[in-house]
Length: 137
Image (tube, rainbow, N blue to C red; front, side):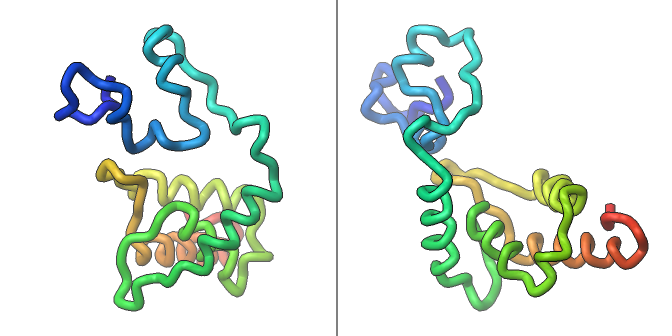
């Protein structure tokens, strides 16, 4: 079980951390009872769009490091939505952003982060590609 802290004696369940605390992660009982069975990626049934929009709104209020630095994926999404040309993005552009950024995401055990400049660069690449009739990839 990689999700249990390495220093935990006997892999105690009270020491699960990181991704196991995410709402879309299986409960510890699932991966103990069925370690070979993949858990389907799904949102919990009691989490709706209004809840997600509230989280997005709250995250966009977090200050970005003015010198540039690491941002969480939700902060990166807020950067995309706050971009002056966001309305020009189509589905292919969003896929292009994903392709440009997916390899840049890092997890240090406390949650996923990526560099703020990587988000800005990916946006510039996608918008530059729109001027050339493509998606900047």
